[in-house]
Image: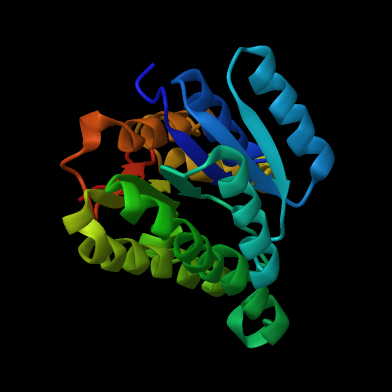
Length: 247
């Protein structure tokens, strides 16, 4: 139970990687505040966590809406008293070639994937500074490192998260707060389930380990970065991509 006594907040926790992260952090002993837009899925997740003997609570929020972020995190702080670990996982896609991409689709992806991380950090950082301990973990993407045709908005948002990670790492390191990123490769989630079988087979050929990843692969990396074992790691991007990108 590496994280016993800690409180974690996970955004985008209703499904996929966020869901797996919440379960994994709870298994390691953390109390977990789970945030997303879908109340029913959040409540099901809370029931799953509490049934296993851990503490959890649901906070319905759209991370693209500043007032919802402020009120949701204020409620989480009120209920748990602190937030030690922040996992900025919420993300969406609105894929299209740049020449056809609507401004609204650009804005939606940047607001949800990048601006929300800034908003969440801003709301929890006071709690971390006060206790001189914290872990900020941003979920970026291999496509924030390599780019991807048809995903200029998504790639830009995920690359922005890497820059945010390094800037925050420098800002708060003196207070014993680390800020790192996890960069998933091709992970089997609802977001990738809609892709064609042809695309998936093509993607697997680019992965040296010869398989797509699971949400649990990412959750394991998040738990490590949240732990004391990772106390001397900050400003780092941990690639969890099966060898899809090296170096």
